[in-house]
Length: 298
Length: 298
Image 1 (cartoon, chains in turn orange, yellow):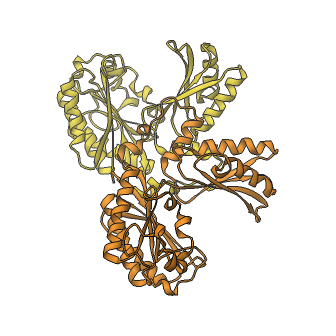
Image 2: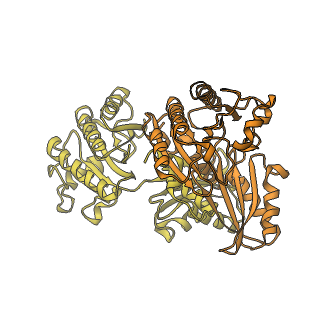
């Protein structure tokens, strides 16, 4: 696989194993695509599917998945805790290897156009593919959810980017876009004082003056009797893991607290961790080319 | 490529580009094998070729290379600074992915037997494939070199593992074996005092009481006006890079000296650097499975 694009559709079905299997089958049966992971949440009534492939592969697999979902999921009967506006709620394309963000935006547009035309579902483009600043943020688009969207869609500023200008009652609407790889990175502190975790979260996160590509909040790990700075790193090339980690170490020591560990949730591209090794070893000549596997799978 | 074995033949020809190309062609033309690198040294009159592949692929490519070398290299006329006993001097097989050391030993044995039988070249097995403790060490086997081997081979303790019991005048003898991946890792110090580099090298290297899988020596980088601890790490799983690096930092601070940088020469398996990231980030849940690329190329 020379070109790697990751696609992570979120589907509004997390309980009916038969339906979930049918959706996953659409991905697995597509050439040029490899299924990496899927996980369903019964409370959220939602399944997150992760697959990778080349440009044509991911576009085709995503379309087949959306088509199948439009046949077997009926949003009129969907209940779940997670906000959603449609049967396939959101479909991000993520550049991983030998592909630019611009190409992922292009994939999102082409898929969006086809979904609007062939499946008669209203399509909103988000993040890097957004056509207005208000549509960059997923939460912004999704506000009102499926139930409220029958009215929201009528507002001129919420006219869909593709597809019909009214809701598809069975499938709802869909958000498609392109974004950077998102790393879920949590740092555990040697204290049970949630205030300290909150203060450190505030120090590193963008919204309160911290690093541009960090979202963070304090979380209690009650069973372990410690607290955690729970983060999403939304662009590890520009805000690298080690910098955030070192800042948290420094802030924690301000309170006489140690960093006792950290964890990565889900998948992480090798480059994000190789950059960490590069930093701590003070390598003078590091390049991705030095890594054996990168020579093999170039 | 599910199974990855690295093979790094050292060939006694580093000047005649035509001959070097013919040898490399034997590798490139073999199915299931990928050429990663080759570099020739005119003073050494020697070429190091690096390729990877599955079991059958690397065995076949190595045999074809040895056969071609036996046709186009004549050791009777070979001069060069690097010690050598034959046209193809040494052929190590290195387990990289989804393959055990035992399997690499098996490949070395099978190749050795075929080379002895079909090409009439005396074969010595070394490192993990060695049949006696004296043959574990390459330098031990090679002592005396091509010129001295016509006598050495007659000693009962130096009877070859495979092939004829006397030298092949044109091709010499060959050393084949299996070993761990070798990482060339150098740490640069903020001083021009070679004594400090020597003392630190002594502290970390196996031969003088240091880490089991470290070879080290002090080296002057005259152009930069600094010194370096130059190392070979012969088993990064058991003596990891970060541990050696941290020990060097600690020893250097004993002399009031800073570590100004480090460098890796040649290729490094991703796991060796991912282990570094794991260590410094204090990850609690690290596994190679978390790395996106490892899911794709499993």
